[in-house]
Each structure stands twice: as structure tokens, then as C-alpha cells.
Image (tube, rainbow, N blue to C red; front, side):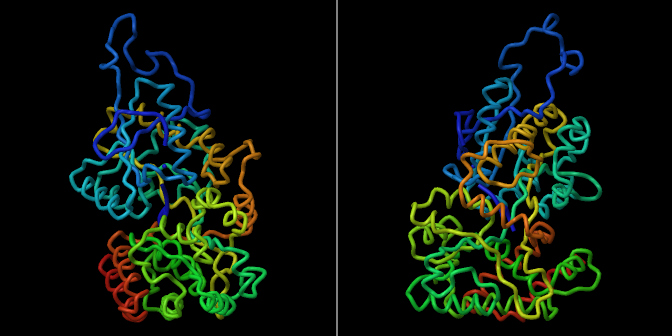
Length: 458
């Protein structure tokens, strides 16, 4: 995946080179401040401090471009703007890196020198590695200290963010990483008034759309994660079923060279071979794939539920014609046709280096960008939050978000590959998928490459 997954702004902050301006949002879930003595802080009667001495600086690194308009990104930045207004003694320095490859490369470099930011975004697989190396801080203590906050999260939301019996990430949304966004009119013109229910119908529709000179599926896999997180994680499960991946994850016998997984690679490559994707699929990113769709030059794109906000901002003739679906059933597949890859996937993690000294401030920031008020903000945008939402304003929820809510209520979430597999294995898979989609490697050979890397960590 990735957050698969994710991308976010407001109010000027203290800025470092290459960062975006930030801000913060108070949290209805945040406990009321106690006395200085209870907090272990000196009493104002005995200690006078200058504003500079009282300021706590929190670094926050994320993978959302400065101008990102997707739901999670905008809600986080709105929340931080409000938080900054209400907590002038905590200054948040945001560094926004819009390229996921560049982001995770920098994250690994910082982790290697034990210099991770105070707060950062991390996929579960990366986070497990940081935790094992002692670079990320376990967050159970601050969760246990505020039962209202901890208990407000959905039961399965920490699954992707725990390792060795400890919690290392705070989830912000429960997302599907594989949603098909499609233009109803283009599909109708190809003879499909409803989204294809089977893989054979899907392939037939793609052929008819292609014949009309329209790109069937816009794909931007320059940063590599889209093909794996947004397509293969769901397509693979269509063929293998969830038990196969559970065996892979638990190292109890399944192999990437097993026939069902190879079939999923073959189906994916077959789409590319028949011209289902734009020819520059490895040269553009996921924002550019949406641009192709928004310009009416593509019938579909496949991305996570986070793209709902972006589609709502598309030209009216595109937004009003867009509907959502999941990949269709495959003949003989062992997966549930009403399943798609999803879960928390990613979360807010904390670097161990400055954690002890800044624990109280870090906890306040985390609550502001994950708790009840933040979750309501997501819900009002039509984004499924990881925190329970009791009530929110539904008046501005986009029609597409309503459609997605209806769809997701019927779905079963299956694992996002890059939330569970090791970073080295994900890197091998992602690079290999780029080769697969331009016919530079066969499905069988790619399966062997992936299996060889898997066996290194088995």
C-alpha cells in the first residue's frame, strides 16, 4: 500500500528549509489541563520563564505535498492550525515531502542515525523495522494515560501499527487502498450501465473503451507504490484468498511462487499488454493519473479512498459522472469479491530521540490529529476515520463520499501488502511490478524474485 496511502494545510508556523507551513487543532478528546504541580511543572509563583524558554518545538515530517487537497491531508493541517492557535507554547515545524519514494528514503536515513522527527508518518512494515532498531518510541504509555482517547479508536485500527506486543503508531483513518473510480458515461458508451461484475466483463469493457481512443485505466506508478498498494494488494487476494497471505505473513508455508499468486501477476500484466493503461505509467505519479481522468481522457483510475476529496474537486462534468467500485471477481479465485485491501495502513509515529523530553507536548499534538474532533472533520469530508464518530455535520458530504460509504459498508478489508511485508521485500515487489507492466519480466520470473527476497528474512 500506502497510504498508500496518504497527502496535507493552514496557518504559518516556524519553517525549516523545504517545509510547509503548518498549524494545529485542539481536540475535544484531549483531557483538560491539570495544575502545574500535577503535571510535574514548576509553579508560576516560584519560577518565571520567558516565552522562549517555555516553547517546545515539535518536528513533524509527512509525505503530503504542500498543495495536497485530499481529505486526510487537509484535516490534519486544519487540526494543527487550530492547535497552534490554542497552544502557542508548542511550535510545530512541518516538513512536507510530496514524493513517497523520497519521503521513505529520507525516513530510513534518519532512522539509521537515530534522528527521526518527533512525529512522522509511517507504514506498518517500516514502523516494525524502526521499532526493532530502537529508533521509534512505543506509545502505549500515553495511550494508557488517557483511556477516553485510547478507547475511542476502532478495535482493529492498531493492527497495522503494532509490533512485538507494543503500539508504535497512532492511526488516523481506516481506508481502502484499492477503489475503482470510474466514469459512468464512458462505461455506458462501452455497453456497461453498471460496473462489470466479473473479470471477463472487466476485460471486455477495457477493450471496448480502448477502441474508442480513451485510456481505460489511468495509472501513475512512478513512485512504485500505486501498482502494488492500490491494485495488486486487492487483485492478489482475488486469486489467493486471505489465508494464503496469512501464511506468507506468519511464514507457515505459502510461497510467492504459488500458482494463485502467479495468476494474479499474469492478470495484471495482461491488462498492460492489452493497452489498459497509459504508456507513460512508470513516468507519472498518482496525482498525474487523476489529472488524466479529470481531463476526460481516461475511463477509470484505481487508488485509495483518500482520493474521494480530490474527485469532489474535479470538473463538475467529471465529478457528477464518477462512481466507485472494487475490482471484480475472478474465475476460480479464492478471495471474497466484496473485499478490498484496507485498514489503518499508516499512522503517526514518534522518534525515540526527543520523546522523553517532549512526551507531554507530543501527546497533545497526537490527540489533536487523531481524536474525536479530528475524526469528525474527516467524517464531514466523507473519509472513514480510525476514531469513533458520534455526530458530525453531514450536510457537506459529497455525493461520491456517500456512494463510497454505501460501498464500504459491504466490504471486507484484507491486508495491504506493504503494511505487513518487510521494506526490502516491498521494494523488490514494487520495482518488479514496474518491469512487469512494461513486459520486461514474466510473472513467473517476478514471483521468483519476490520469493528469493522473502526467503532472506524467513
